[in-house]
Length: 433
Image (cartoon, rainbow, N blue to C red; front, top):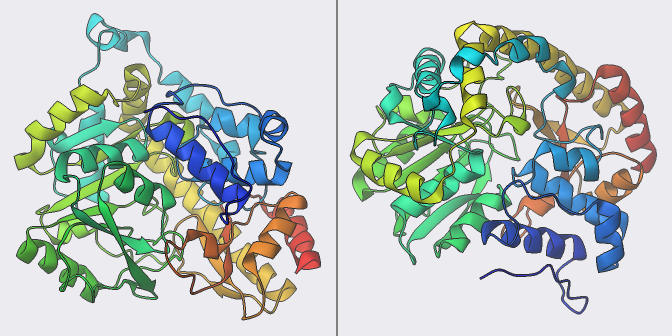
């Protein structure tokens, strides 16, 4: 049922969280259609009687979760805001090379017709080849299903493998959008705590979970890397319990140690693993191209669900992306950006330590963000709000907990902020701490 956007000022739920939940639900139930333009932040402010910071916080969170596209962000959420997590360096997007990959030779009757529900064949071939070489994921183009963003991939998975009432386990802290998707499909959601070795598996043996969602290469938002011991234990759980593991490998291309952990999919030979990847972090969220690697036994079910939901990306964009990858542009871009991101990561980490000694930098040398943990008595929500008022976007770690909050900190996205801008932003943040 379609719903309106309503705010209850008598509720104990914070206003920014109410707006985030209301917009997320409107997107999931179709009240806000894909591609529909949102009101500007000032218009939301006027219609709902909320502060601008409240609106910007909600829109920024939904963009980081993949619900809003970059067009909305540019209008509503200050695209250039320093330290926004989950955003690559969009000013470094290889525009010239990508533009040249839009080739009229690809615009045949086949590509201009309704798309293959699995996605454009040549792009699936390129992705499968790259996954085999870089992540040890043994897959063929037939195993790949392309979706209109990672959120559509999760929704597709849930639709196929879960029934209403099934138990699904998510990381805590973790992506609010994943939990929201599970709840929208009638799943019973259980939260598993995350420590420095990744998701804790203690409760799995006692429960009846059907699915476990994990970000093993770089847990979001804590940054923890799932230990090899727990990787094998999780694979064994799936084998013994006939459960499913959803492996979200969202930013694994950016590892700065030279020793990335293997993908769960590769360790398990693809059995009981649904591997999700996206181009949002390596190129741009505006492309809206993600994918799921699906075991052969589920091909028919996923294809049927894909036909019903029609969540495949734009075929013309897929064709250009296939040419881009085939020409070697993606590999060169990732190699180039890995060096830039590593330089920015080192700079922001060192400068934050020096400017705000009370912060403990939790940097796993991977991905596009790290966590700056705060001592007891220092509120991450208060500092985050002050930072937003000063033009910075550093979400509070406590906002990602589904249950009882057990840690306080700031989620720092270093990738999209150039060093000169980062230097002044850190000085602003230090003046607020």
